[in-house]
Image (cartoon, rainbow, N blue to C red; front, side, top):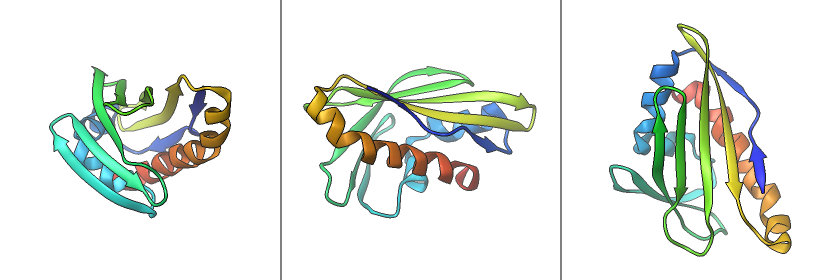
Length: 131
């Protein structure tokens, strides 16, 4: 299953956006209002939970400065990735698009598609204000 957020414009350089996303504690400022838990576990790993959902641990898996950051599931029963793609518009402006990629059975995919899509949209929408 592959889902994408809308592209959002951020009036910062790709390096500034990349540096913001590289510091995992900054993800707390991107989270939806219905977050019930956010905890930094170490330099490249954090845990979060949304109300009514299980806790999810994300770990930084790959970084390609200043254009791409890949976070992946760290433990748990579900394997997936959250990818941040940063595109330079000009020296002081970027476009960011988030992608979610995971291998799920059809029933699970049907159940999580809507909440994950909404989650991606919220992260992306909050980015221009947070960075």
